[in-house]
Length: 417
Ligand code: UD1
Image (spheres, rainbow, N blue to C red):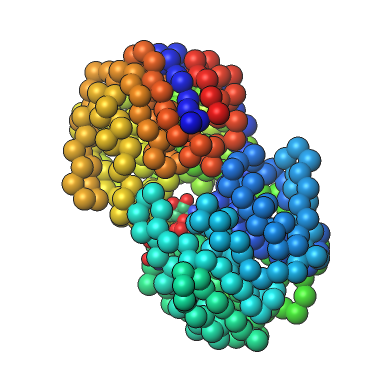
């Protein structure tokens, strides 16, 4: 079983370059099926989710080559509209192929992705929207059979600004007849990156980053070269690692505007932060101050993907903090593990109350999901003695060379695959 072994207590200091955003890379990799031509993507992190996405693309006839951090995806050989079930099961976000393959082939068969570690993750908004655009979708034996001779531009009102549903609609609408309007769309920076990528190959998307997005259908798309935006959650996690170890860190290739809500909370904890151009320097205080409350919200609110890392910080802060998780139902699994390390946390449904303690102590803990696992790594870096974080493979889904990066900052960490 893969595990991280960490001996805590070292202050982290140094410089880190933040790589491309996982949540931008995955939908853009799915979108490469659209043009039926060459796609050159830069700053692609080495993550297990990227490997699964690559396997899916290869299984449907695309060729994918990696050279360093550049991926070249040629989708001219696409010859299959059925996504292998085992790969969909491994990565829920493969549901993003629904819109992309439907747009390119007029048909797609994909297994129902089901729930995951952080709770049930329905796709009703994806399906309803595609049906409104004229897709026929039959759900049987755990599979979705979708067909649309022609998708039609229409007005779509989302009940909730779902990131995945917004992306699926954009992809489906690229070749649709007429204009598709998405209202109450997700406003995450990754949606803007998708818009930029599609427009760079000749698509007509506008409004991304706001709550209303327009997609005008086009007939054809060209080859494209695109640079992925930096990963705001990876940036936030490394800032948190410096904060919890009383260290100081300099991040480059980061877009401070994308992480304002995180920086705001880190400042509230007593961290000194200077952001300039595409860099951020953080100096941690000797003792973190508890923030009153952290409520996760769609962007530009505080991201659910940083909730667990902030909770790790609050376990050793001075005071009491309240966490309110409004995005996912089951996203406090790390709380129980942090408690094994000496944290004082009470969870009641979507609320967790954290009372800062003097110190955490090393223990054997279990990474149950990607970001929860990252939180355990942070706690371990600050804890007294040795911590073993089991099921490290969850963390590989979202952090490129985590062991090396933390080592370069002075951490005592080993990753046993
Ligand atoms: C994306 C991110 C994930 C992040 C999440 C919220 C990727 C690959 N993943 O996930 O890291 O944590 O956004 O910022 O980009 N919902 C429905 N019906 C739907 C779709 C969603 O009820 O059809 C609900 C979900 O159950 C959840 C909420 O909406 O409670 C948010 O989900 P969504 O924004 O769709 O997240 P993902 O796209 O899955």
